[in-house]
Image 1 (cartoon, rainbow, N blue to C red):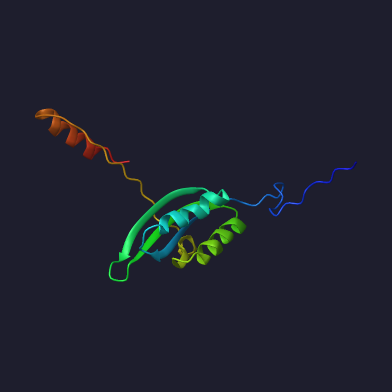
Image 2 (image 1 turned 90 degrees about the horizontal axis):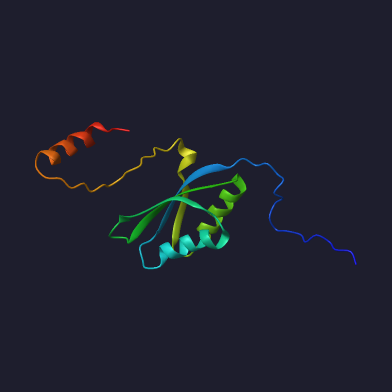
Length: 131
């Protein structure tokens, strides 16, 4: 009995395509469950999300923007964009990295307690620590 190797829908892992990082802006309806559907698309297909931000952009029109940073081969990124465009609550998918290098910042919120002179010194120390 001869065993044949199963054909895969996915490209061979031996191909060496470069991994690219993309920032996608997804304009969606601002209604319950939309974020879960968009994120479900990523988790269901095994795509990774490096960063995720959601904000309401137009209150009167009930529109929000989901900003997603993800990584993958150019073929995978194109597939992600096409699958996002097919979702019902999605109005538009825009690749922000095509416009140029994005500005990225990290933010940490830290609660520090102190009384009297120690409290003032903590404030001075935190202002000096610019990274």
